[in-house]
Length: 284
Length: 164
Image 1 (cartoon, rainbow over the protein chains, first blue to last red):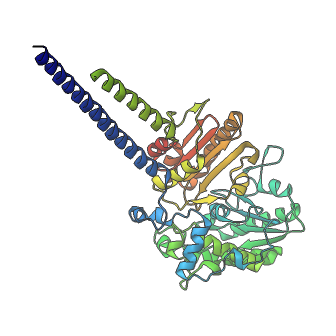
Image 2: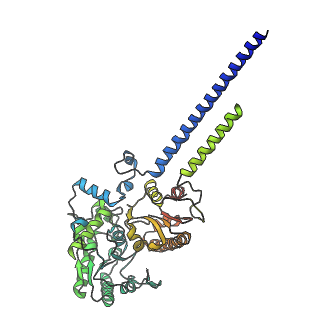
Image 3: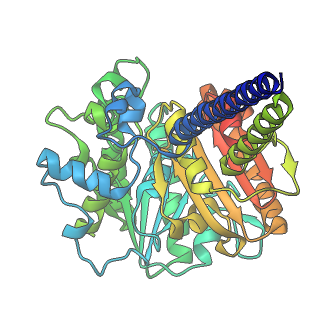
């Protein structure tokens, strides 16, 4: 009887041990599965959050056109130029010593774009979206050193510049009386002379627009650009300012801005801004 | 046995959740458009890049070098440790500004400067390009402790999600 009881106890103990082992194995299996899931989700999520696709990433194929145009750093732009065999001049091809530290750029939203891409941090920009030739000298759009708001003339007067570039006129292409444009332009140049008598003043030509932009049917046409540029040349001959024909650096054989140099037909993208700035440096 | 297994699973799940929370740099729970006084460490450069890459822009945005930020954005370099700014061609109001300020007071100054800047942009674009006003009205400006973020785009919902 005792033998039978002992045998039964042994069998029960073995069964209990097996159940325990099975339980432990099950728990470990579940833990492994859980860890795998958590790790997998986390790893996937991290890639989505922290790793932006590079330009040669296969996933970039689903990007929009705007994203394809997006420049992330100057090195990638340089690589693209090299890849496409573009031999246009870059900053490295210019006078390395010219850091534009004595240069001031006055202009509208096109100059804002130049400011954003300009690789010369010492250049000074007095520009804003919607600047017009008639409000340039009266709009207190700039913060002066004393914290007050001042006009472009007030702001220019606080510094010392060797070269001052003006790029205005695109926003005025719809003006019916070109004489008014010339009058305001002359006034701007004279006021600049008064606060910066030793600076060379360059009146830049209005830059071309794309052929597709011309089709919108308003006054922003390349014929109008040419007409207003002739008016600026006249102002230069009257005031002693230097006419700087940046137009020729950006117009194609038909006198238009190439379509892929702008998102709206007017404002210049990075590569076009590089050409614009290269022309300025090479010719002044 | 069942109790041990249940307790073990609960403990592992808690640990996993804690690990996920601590590793997720952008999982801060603050809402865009509001300001918080305390925050975990954040990488403003990665946030800026995510805003650039995960949102579709009409314009081409280019990164401003850090030595140009003071001159272009008008925020003193003494106010921030790290700044990453993307600006466009002038055609649109689209842009990205992300700063890690030196401290919370500096962050408040940056936030205030960007707030004024957005108001100024509204005044400029109102007549010049009225189509941009919707983006400006929905501009996402958020401060999270010493971090300040500004996103001007068509997709304010995605921007809020990214900024946190």
